Each structure stands twice: as structure tokens, then as C-alpha cells.
Length: 287
Image (cartoon, rainbow, N blue to C red; front, side, top):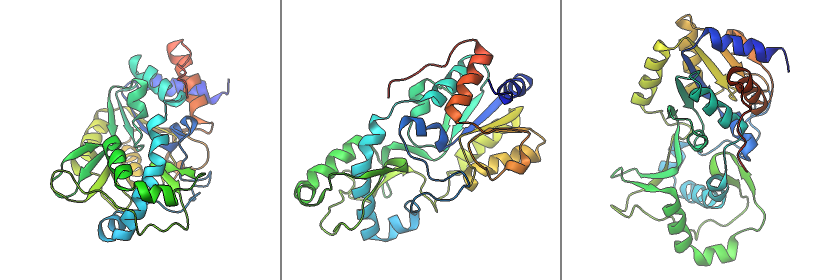
């Protein structure tokens, strides 16, 4: 066992009221790609921007084509070792609150009970006009029903998946693709997630900040912290004099502020950590 795992276990023992912030690295072992390389640079084209989605019909149409192709992979994903280990640590009393930047719902599926989905959940759809919410699976059915002819004519056979239910589709004619409107008011439907360029709901941020005030320390797991929505909590912890530890392969935007860093695959590291702290091997979920 690497020496930094016992050090991380001791960090958690010394700080029993632990707040955990997770990122894409927790879900890569579930087959969901991440956004950035070990240096924090984009691996793929930047994801959909909120302003483009709202203001450009062609961009919105392109998004829903890619989402329709990519959604089944998210829907079929199962928790990995990082999710299982964090659920075990919560059950053993080591985690007071888990805040995730992921939108896949896998922490809930693994059994974590105190979870805040900072960026929302991809399994829901929201109307931007009347605020009605619908299951994402219903949207999938609506997309397929409205585009049966387009799918037969244009849908490629082999498409690479991308983060957050996206798919890497190039050089398709999207003009004939129909995006269904809200069944309640005919408004624009959007995944119930926070897009790039969109603000995290203020009450959600305040809930996390209040929990951080009551916490002894912050643990970051599987996040490069390149996005401010997560980095703000590290900065708030440091400003309050609370130590921050991280488990992440590659650099983070807060490396200089960390009291401890474990640079290992997050699933491996957290599974070993759960074993040290609970005496039980982390559960494995079938992928």
C-alpha cells in the first residue's frame, strides 16, 4: 500500500466532520469519459455553452442529436469503485456531505445518502418557460419518435462517446432534425444540468458553503478544479483555515493550497482508504 494512503486515513481521522467534493475522475471507471488531461487541458472540444443553447436554434438542434446518441451510455452506467468507497465511508460516519460536480447520479446509485448535485442531474429535463420537469428517458422517446426518418437516413453506426452524455458527431446534416417542445407549454426543453456559461443556483452554493462552515476539512476526489464552481469551495475552506486534501491523477488548480495530495487513480486510492478506515474491501458494482 502506498505510504500516502495511511496519511490520508490519518487526515480523515483527525477531521471527522468531512465534506467531500467529487469530479469526473470518480466516473471514468464507470466508462464515462472525462474532460481534461493530466495537465488540466481539454481533451475534446469544449461542451455546449448555455448562451449558444438558448440563443441558437442550430446549436440546440446539434446538442440534442449528440445527446440522443450519447444518453444510452449514461443511462446504462453503473457505480465504480470510487462511488462505492465513498458510500462506505459515509456509512461508517466519515463523510458528512458529498458535493459532486458530476451529473450522472452514480453517487446516489452507489448508496451515498447525503449528496448535493452541484451541476444538476442529466436524468431530468426542464422547460425554460414553465419550469416543468420531465424524465430524460421520456425526452429520449420523444426525440426518437419525432425523428424516425432522420435517424434512418443519418445516424452513424460508430460514434465515440464524450463526457456528460455527449457524442462526437461530425459532418452531419442536422437541419432536418426536430427537437420536441415542452409537452406542457411548447417551451424550450433543456437538460436539468448547469451548462458552461450558466450559474449554479445560488441556494445550492449557499447550502454547500454553510455545510463547509460546519466541516473540519475538505477532501477533493477526482477533480482538477479547473472550473470555478468547484474551486470556490477550496478557496473558502483555505480562507477559513480548514485543511484541504485531494485524490487526483495529474495537477489541480489548487495544488499550492493542499495540505495533502494523493496522486493515484481515484477508484484505487479511495478503495484502499475505505479498507483502512472501515476494515472492509470496497464494494464492486457490475459495469
